[in-house]
Length: 289
Image 1 (cartoon, rainbow, N blue to C red):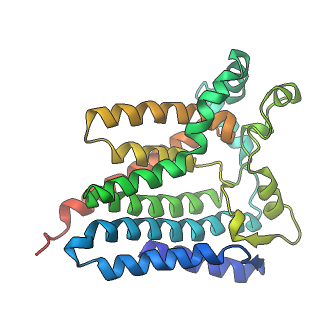
Image 2: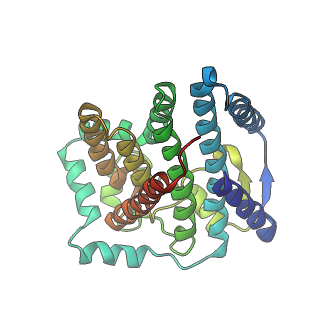
Image 3: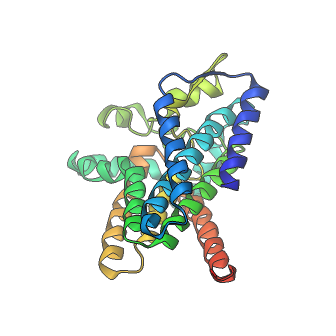
């Protein structure tokens, strides 16, 4: 909750500093829902007969609130107008021997069926995370449910702070027009409209109902994918299923999100640090009395 509180303060401070207009239209229902979830979690917290509901409400409310705050940060930080990092990220990929544009071109030549295969895992990454967290809460695995919530808000704030200095529009910057014409609509350019609005626009409006991902480096899709994998690591069947889903989703980050390969490496590093921190806190936490 301290991470969520810090995220909200940063978002509020940036809104005031940049004098960005905020349009709250359409968010009231979500705000009341988040408040109700957090209140229910607090009321039921020490009731053993409602502990699973307390965990489900608490984790979802915490993650949703942190997500809204960090989503606002991701858009507002573009007003700092740091130079685009696409050139450096592209060179880093090529130095590793990875050409993301060539991979997307190969995928397209394989046939459009490949996009039907990889699109659902990519588009449903966040729902898969929320669903996994709810299932863990309802089955009584509260440590893993709250680990997921803790790592989500921690990695998301970290991702925003890193991306502040490395704004990038992704692989779409380097794709030739002939390739773009063959790809599904908005492929590799899904967040460009909002990115341009806050990076180049003279008077952007922060509409919380359309806050979305405008971050290329590090890849938060990659982070959430590993969060889901970690949630199901204790059972061989669920681990294998989550691993197959993760592999397909990571492949989709190139045409779907226009991510560089180094975006995925950075995302994995951010996840690994927070997951290791959660395990350390788990080992050093005093036993419940």
